[in-house]
Amino acid sequence: MDAWSQKIVASIEKQKKPIVVAICGAADLGKSHLSKEFVKSLRIKGTSASHLTLDSFLIERSKRLKQGKSGYQIEAYEHLSALEAISQFKQGQPIIYAPYEHDKGKQSCSLETLEPSTILFFDGVQSMHEQFLPHVDLSVFVYTGDDVLKKLRIKADLTKRNLTIETAENNSESEFLQYKKQIEPYKKHADFQLFLERKWSYTLQQVTQTDTKQLASTRSSQF
Image (tube, rainbow, N blue to C red; front, side, top):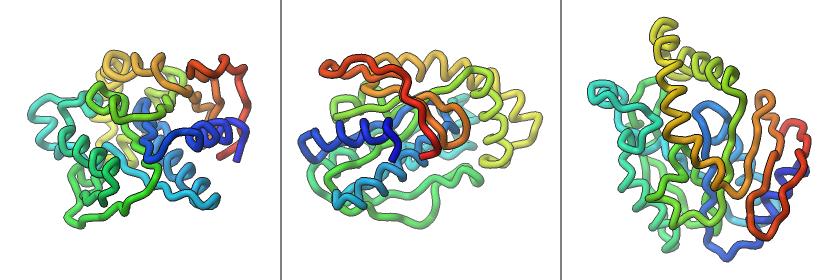
């Protein structure tokens, strides 16, 4: 692992178990990728860990569009079901959920089960929302430059969500404004802030934990 990921893992391992780690930030910045890599690293060390994405609780895209809801709004999610899932994890119970299929814009017909573990990585644009925060023990906020963010959104809309170029470009600015309003304010409250330099390459910009001084930027190679 790189220096920045070692720092985050070390902080996780100090927490009283079970713990929830929120991986928050704009869409399409690799939050799920990061979560899975952290899970892999902890399992190698013999620690049980699992990953749940808030996207699994997204309302079907066609319904959201009719209601004028952006994926950056908490109302776009079955957030009470997500909250119940986190509560089940804290109680040592398995979580049964249906993954969201972005290319189809709806949840899968197949259910998956997360077995009990000591660490849950909970990723999503609203994973630091006030409803979830009382259950979150550690938080990581992922961000990048505004121009890069807009380009990544268009690319993901085309390749991940199967939208037309016209729709993707029309959505870009409105989704960016929603991010600025709904999500970016969480950044200052995160325990760790990660800056996306390029695909799968991050820089630890700041640690905001009270027991840790602000770090100088720690360069990373790929995770």
